[in-house]
Structures are given as structure tokens and as C-alpha cells.
View (spheres, rainbow, N blue to C red):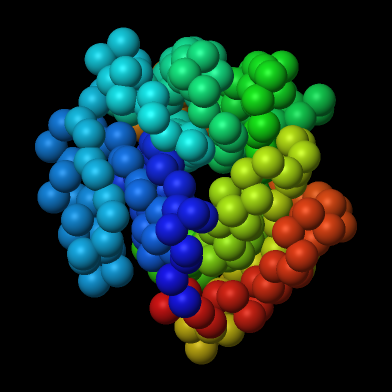
Length: 308
């Protein structure tokens, strides 16, 4: 069903060539909204090819600009109703540093968006970017989240756990692990995760866009199933038709590997930041999410079937 013209909104979207951003772009444009996507120079073909069937013929405008140089594209934000920031990196390196990518640039963008009259800002953060945050990844996300909450503007900070679905790199990596004859697992494998399917995350964002004058807030987003990391791998193994044989690598050994990765500028198996985030786990009470958006996210054992 097409949206009526009076509900059509102009949306400025960052991170549109990434996994989450590309799904957001597709969902909002298919709803009849006009989506302006900020893309890195040379990424136009990548965006069009990423979900070519869905994007064909829909209302998507592309503007080129380097995320970490907002002075070159900020003037394009004016005239939009909603701003959605889905830019993120999991490891520092050639794609940038946490403080620049997650903190400084979003703060400049949010400040400007308030100045030019954006009605609502939606920030895709991460579960764990809270008062207990210790990793540099989470701390950088939290700083931008808190700045946004201080502005005089409607906003939503949504903090998802692992996001999975067709085209997602993290779950594809975990699936490859589960398919190995012997699956190496960081530590004891008992740290907990709460994966959320990309369709559920995007559904929540679409609802928030539609109700753009709703009460502001920060909310965690996880699936309806909490698992240990070992259990998640077992679910992936059953989907592949195989039994996962876990080989638990002690934390102290993983710590040495992580420090080596850090010294090599991010080139390695796992960084200290990633190790810290895994050990902490990524789970939350879903009652706020269900109350705000009116639906219960699917459990991982169900959603993973839709991801192939």
C-alpha cells in the first residue's frame, strides 16, 4: 500500500552503503519517502548493485561526500524532515578512528541538523554504549548519543545487539566458523548475545520515522532469544546441518592475540576492543522495545532461517 502524499517525508541517510543502512534505504524508499543518501566518492555503483532489484525506480537521491569531512556536504542536510545516522566501524584502521567516525562527525551533523530545522534524528548506536561502557568503540558511540539527547529536537537512539540477515558480514563470519571441522571459540563461550534480525531493526526505524513527533528516548534492541555464544554457534550449525565442535581458547591467549592485532594497526584476528565487547556480552530487557514499537522481534532460531 502506498503512503499518501501528506505522509511522504524527505530523509537524509548516512551509512547507506553499509549493511544496516542499505536495508533502511530500501525500506523507506519503498514506503514512498524520498531518501537522500550520503555516499563516499566512487560508491554509487556499489549502492545501486547492493540491492538493485529493490532500489530500481524508487525515490533515492545520491550525494557524494567523505563522512569525516562534513564541511563539504553539511549544506545538503537542509530541507529534510528526518536525519538517520547509520555510520559505524567495528575496528579502527583505514576506515577511520572511533572518535572521528562515531563521535566528532556525528556531533557536528546533529548540531547542524538542529540549526536547519530537522524534525527528528535517529541514531543507530550499539548495545553496550551505556553507563558501564569500557571499550573505546562503546565510549565513542555513547558520547554522540549523549550529545544528541541534549539537543532540543525529537530523537531516537537505538542500540542494537548483533544485527544479522542476508548480506551481513558478522553473522556470515560466525557461520563460517560453525562450518569448520573444529570451531575456535574465544574464551569459555558463555558470554551472552541477543541477535536481532535486520528486518526487525529496520521495522522499528520505519515506525519511528512515521511517528516522527513521538517521545524521544534511548532504547536497546535485541531479538527475543538470549543465547550464549556457544549456543548461537550451535544454532548456526543446525542450520548448516552439522554439529559444532567447540575449541575454547583461553582468555589469556586471546588477550595476547588481541594486543598483537592492536600493535599491527588493526590487522589481525581480533582487537582488544572487540575482545572486551565479546566478554561483556550484549543483552538487554526487550520490554521497552516492545512497548515503543508494538511488536516482538523474532528469536534467532527463527530469523536465521530467513537469512539464507
